[in-house]
Image 1 (cartoon, rainbow, N blue to C red):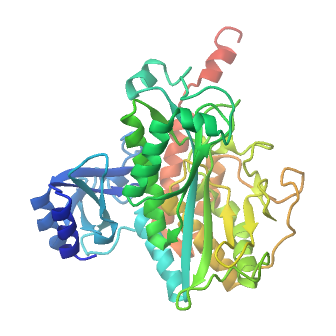
Image 2: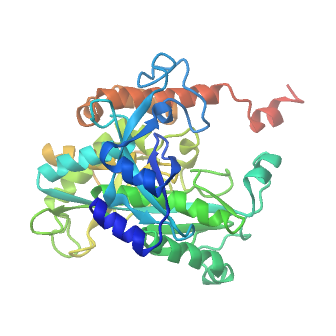
Image 3: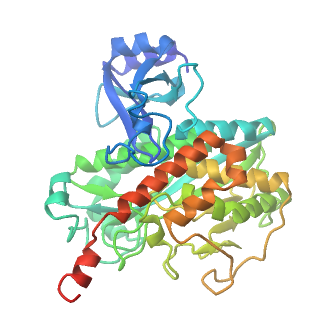
Length: 450
């Protein structure tokens, strides 16, 4: 889309204001509302956007005591240059008269900031396209919905929350129908927001839903996945509800997956290269899976980015616990779906719903392409990945995963030293914050009896 295309669309829809924003390292959309006049003047020259979004954590606490070099008190937290991506233009159906466009944040020389998640995915997709591949992705999210507000969450200390509906009732037509005003609002409004869903249904757990975002190419798929999480939060707020995409909200309930479906297509012939015949994997698909399985332990911090991520990876809970694969096997980290011509794909089941989709997709694609380049052999497929010896062990904590990631030659080769060092430092910070916390478990365990 050109500026003229966008302005014509604005005129047709009476758009008078524009939201612009960029996703930070944790997948949070940081942005601001500007006038249409300001938007038009910013398209050519760009717009200044404070680079502090890469200098603080998800709670707006400045990184301190970890090796974050991109910005800080030593630089004065200057503006980065935000270049508006016309292709990302969306009208916000729940905010009439308002459009949204995403920014690519650049340095003073005009080059993309290496730690910007959207730019990272764009870079890896570009490398795939240079090899003649057209990568396609689709995100699948599980999330809890509560009858709470930001204020009530804090008043309750995030405990004893009221779910949208009680009990365990996966795939319930009844529950979805009873809450049809919300369910249809999510389904219809997200489609109008150019984030169409293939499906939306209840999952097992109180107030849990699963949404499958429609497949798309490369960067567009990352945008749709990231904007889905933001959009659902905004829609739920209008129903006096609040969702969470935490990987694990309770030890007594299933975790929330953020699975990534993926395939490689021939860029010229528009042919699915994972299809080797109905129900048969192509050699290319097998090499790709080989890369995912081999490099999963090194890239786990990109799939499981929080302290909470590792609480989800528990045997017998539908979550992966090792670097394993299987054909149509939901116990494995990598589920191969040979399928037919269009449906042959891989489901990466390792990421939780807390995953930044730009980083998760970039990690999958890089590992898969590495597997193709080296024609990696597949290890044996698993029957039950929870059985002992059914796959290489994974790091069990964020600290361990970050150390593996920092030392990964493969990660540095694909993502660059600047990104690896920055991302590892931000995960060190997350570990550091957790190490200072006094948890409810500690209080109940030690307060009286120790």
